Length: 473
Image (cartoon, rainbow, N blue to C red):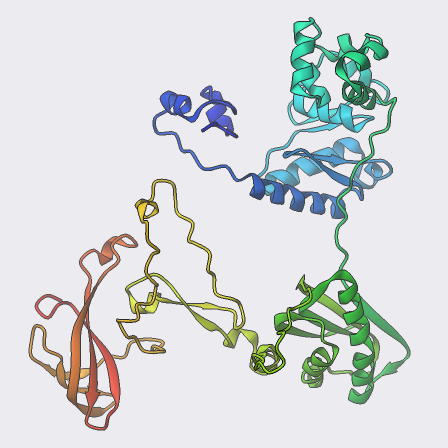
């Protein structure tokens, strides 16, 4: 196991990337070590590239695992010049928790080399036309060439870019291949180095402006029915399905009216979207009239073709997405959920919420390094034990019982008063003892509950619990 990255404090102690973890632990036994996540780092770098393409310059490319190449041609003056633009980028990175080094040069190769190998604090701006002199004292790896070629050049006594630039190109190409010469010429600017830019995805939206303001519900409904097919066509061209759609009606008095609908499953069904929006059309107050109507997509998901059953006599599974969308439009998406099992013995903690149609998460739970559960050869038990029955739903808060008559310490209640009614128990089961989860809070170290399932004379069943074990509170 090798060190992939080290914070500034670790580097000050002599711990550098590439060092063995055992050697690093020998330097500092209490060293905090976390597993590397190259995929997560690359995803974060891609998000940062999208942010840069939207804020700083239209041409932004990812180079390697830790570098962004930004073409500042024609945009630096929009940010107050190169120096002010670089300072703003450093501040933005700091707010997002990143440390960065910026080098500005005439070529991408020179900028990459100066950012990685030149000695400077945070920002280095190379004077136009002077990048060759700035590259001369840098080592050969600053050209992003094969390590084997770097090692062979070192054996020949060539360790700096200035020494390599002074040599004739033809012998270098015959001895080391064309890649070394290409990288050298790209850094010096004699060969172009095209960038592969990150292109931000533009928001999908359709709009219709009117010569005369629209002031009736019938007119609004007509144009909604005309715009939704255009929106679905744009979604189909992008291979996406809508999960959240927003309608914006711009009034004459510049007070926009907004309708937002969410979908339980990604869809681009025109009729379904029209029905959902029409149910909310009474929320639009036209006032003196509406100048324009815009439909825009707030959230999308990839939507590909779905498999179809081969047998015609097989019963098709019902599609609950339209029903869920209809109910969510009426009562709100936050009032609809599906229960999700959570690994906990405490009843109120054993149920979580998730989307109505979200598939159950079958992925194995990520465990920390050294977790003893990794030694299990069998699959872990279900979070909800089928042999321990539980009610389908619990009260929002447990309700207190009065005048409880029970034989202590372990017998179930025989009579109790709940909501002003005296209830006599004819059948009971229990107790089921549940201890507190001491690993969550120290206050639960000695906490105990005894649960009983009881049935009254009318056949009603209750799930009761008592704090303590019947002898101690």
